[in-house]
Image 1 (cartoon, one colour):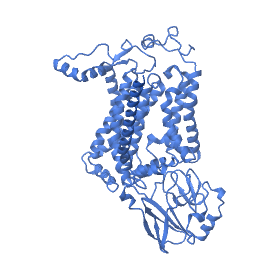
Image 2 (spheres, rainbow over the protein chains, first blue to last red):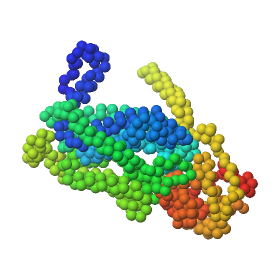
Image 3 (tube, rainbow over the protein chains, first blue to last red):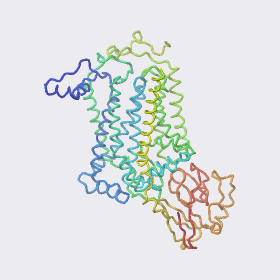
Image 4 (cartoon, rainbow over the protein chains, first blue to last red):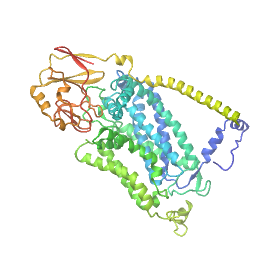
Length: 419
Length: 173
């Protein structure tokens, strides 16, 4: 994407680059023109890459000590915690790493929602991102099953039973997933196999995600198209790398805080009880990052209906670029949408909260209200607001508001003036 | 003209034939990869369990494991049987007579999978609004016959295949 074709300095490098243009790729990544106004919400891509690498490295190490067998799994995890050198540290990094991964991905997704990064021409980046998010949930769920504690076992039972809601073939599918007539040793074994596989699938999708990003280039807080390279852009290195590195450092401090001071606060104490197929824990909850969807599932008093609504809550995001009718990307210039955006944030947080509470009384009412709003937001609010909203004037370029201290209405073009 | 048409047809035939053979081949390879995930012979071998029921008092129940799933064996009192039979079928989301859930002449024995038909948790006994079972996961209430009365579960708790080997032994499966 850089203006000039890269030519390596040394003869040997040139010889190699002519045969495999890795150095050209490196030069592209270094020079990659990036909007100069990216704020700290844009640092989570780098943070997420760090999270993925952390999970893969710690996971490979844990797999050297873990035993994927129903009789041995729980003990082998305790063996990692007590006997393996630094096993406690590696396992705590891996288990808290999953939570940090989701924390970062949720910020990343909501940043995209606020600044309209999913909108044309970046729909494919968004869709690949959602596929990564789905795989993350699958990997996290299967990983949570591996210690074979009570929450592992019953979480696996509840989630796999979701498929039994499918008419006619539901029970056959569930039995096929289990490899037994209930969640049992074959289930644990295959979950381990898939848990090891999925991070590498994610890695592949991350490459596609970044590739697709580098075609149109980054969106930015102002949300306008920019010329690349121009006075609106800076080279990725060192400007963005140093900013990403600083954000990553802050993120790692928080990460380390969990690992060293409250390593179990995001987990559930019942998972330190070995799996028992005869007793269901009194209060089953998924990990925190799945709670909003769990609340949606429980808000419906019908099995199939609940399952359909829960999956719809995720899959509706795939058509988001076509549900949003606004011509303006960034919510900075969308005074009405901006307010609905924050209502959605509060709504999802509330769903997460009620997902952790018993499904009765006021919690059930809140779950239903939250679920209805969630779908209204995407199906009604986004198309209608995008169509009716009177957006603020958007600047001609990134430099303009930076240099003049604000958008000049005289210079600005109003996008929502009907063409 | 006709010569050209013939040529194209022959090629079309070869394409179609190749695709068909290829699809059959791919299918023949994929099916074993899928079917290997179904329960294996070792799992299927655990298909039956025999249970000694001589020590269960009226009104009490035990739980045994069958194919990795809990099975409730409840010896019901005559009041409980009467209660189960007094329920009108119109009040049931999944209408089924209590008579159809037990063996004739052995009405006191309720043998059923202790698995909530919602998402597979184990319901708690002697709890809930209907004097039967209550599932703590998502709040399904079952009556004294194990029939769903309230909550998200779609059907009654399942009755497995079972038989009385003699008056003290039940064979499940």
